[in-house]
Length: 304
Image (cartoon, rainbow, N blue to C red):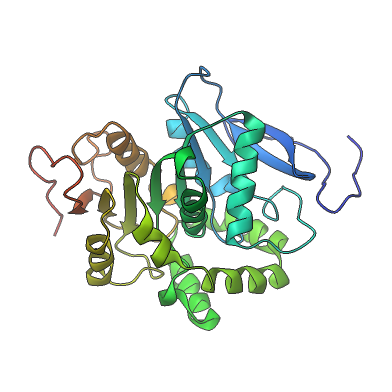
């Protein structure tokens, strides 16, 4: 198709070599072109949407999303202003991105969904749940970021730098083009929006089954004591699980373990290590709300 000149519209060109086994598609939401990936499953399959992090597109979420694509109606959009999608006339903040996620689901004819977010995607989920609790069935927050622990900007930059050294080298081939496309001005504006967002308040107000997944090598997360303190402070149905050896981009680096964990959570099954990934990172439960069913069977042993 020809190039469009409206602010939120971009050339609707699909890659010559698709990056995903999911179908790659375009739609228009509020006059903005939105690029997304979607699994081809029966229409009655439960819907699951994956939301990306700061400055990135949905591409790095694909390793996990693809593993779940046969079981769930899986959607991985590039939110407006990110990746291949068009930009809004004004810079988007967290509420705007949550609204865009809702409007994207409207466009796809989806009333209720489970949301899987990484990093910045987690505050977007919290805002979505705050305004549209009837439309979110479960929340899966992977490496939630944007709180006081990531402030000020120079601290966040240092954390991201340390994290980059802990991620698989192939992650850089995905992340660098996305960051360059996002741009420095957008980075400053989006970071300011994240620092102003009441993430903790929204987290404590959640009233749906929630899975929180963290990595023990993630420099953007506070220490275990603070994480467990926050988890214990909520009356929500919270399950907190740690993956050994994982840094921040768990959806990319530990997709097998994360997909296995999501399946267990969605089926209300006990948290056990993935038998199909021998020798890989182990996952184990570190907090379970009394509102959730108790774990059955022995807890996976941590490696020394």
